[in-house]
Amino acid sequence: MNLRILPVVWVAVGLLLTPLKSNAQSVDAKLAALEKLPAAERQQKLLEGAKAESEAVIYANMDVSAMKPLTDGFIKKFPGVKATSVHISGAAIITRVESESRAGRSLSDVVLSGQLGVLALLDRKIFGRYRSPEREFYRDGSKDKEGLWTAYMNNVMVSVYNTRQVKKEETPRTLEDLLKPRWKGKLAMDSQSYVWFGTILQHLGEEAGLRFMRRLNEQNLSHQRGRRLMTQLVAASEFDMAVETNLNSVLSLSRQGAPLWFATMPPFFLSPSLVFMTANAPHPFAGALFTDYLLSEEGQKILVTTNRMPAHTKVKSPESQLLEGQEVRMPDIFDIGRRYQAIGNRYREIFPGAR
Image (cartoon, rainbow, N blue to C red; front, top):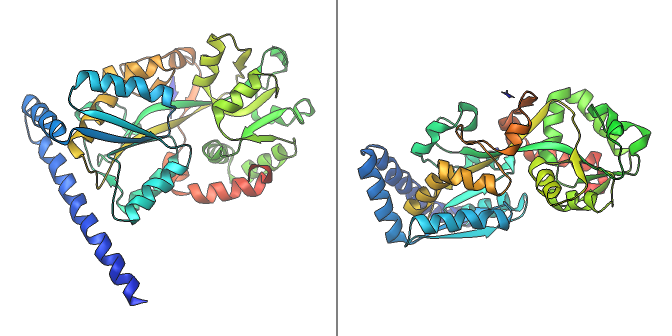
């Protein structure tokens, strides 16, 4: 498989942000000190610190059903340290993390986000620096050199169709096939499909990509919020096909008997989900311990049981096996992340039904 961001007011703000900077430095210093220790001593000090803090708070836009096995596994492995997961849907997780940082108080230790727009927060020093030893099992493209973020799993973006309503020979083989009269009024699309939108603009080129998107809008799309819900609606015959969803949802529902499968439209593109610690984490040791667990082979194997595609090089999933021999690419996630707001604005401009 190929894998190719009035003076009185300013005084108040200054007073508010100064403790944040200082605290962020102390968090970084605490975690950096761990790197200098031998492995056994490092683990002992990390565990002692985590137990003293007693809890790691995780913000995640992953489904609750997928987070629970992870937090349960963590608590079982490390008794005395709670893992409290707060579910925040879609791009709202970016707003939540940013607003807490602006207020000078972070309530989360770890953030799990499939919204690449979080990368636009890098310049605002919201990410904490933590080089988990588990990162050695992740490809260079799945982590940054500074230890600010790691892609802990990948979503595969695919088009899904209802096998009762769509004959196999009718399924699209290329993006252009989505523009055929057969699909007019029959397609669903997520109202926040920004990563796919940015990926296709990279793939086709800006001008050709925007031209394709405008023609796609002429297909009278029905915009839905949430890929899993949209996939379920396709399974319920509400729509013949969804333009873009996650492969893991297709496979999960298909195994349960839903009349679903995905269209073979190479290349397949990955959309990574990132994990990072907040710069002002209230429980840095517990947060680091959870990050290690998530990135460990054990944590990654739990992801497989929830129908996710882990990024750990030693852990395989049904998705990765299914795509063996296919052309699979990783888009330029920094380009998409740093232009996320502009991409979202252009998306809503071209697809007014998504507003």
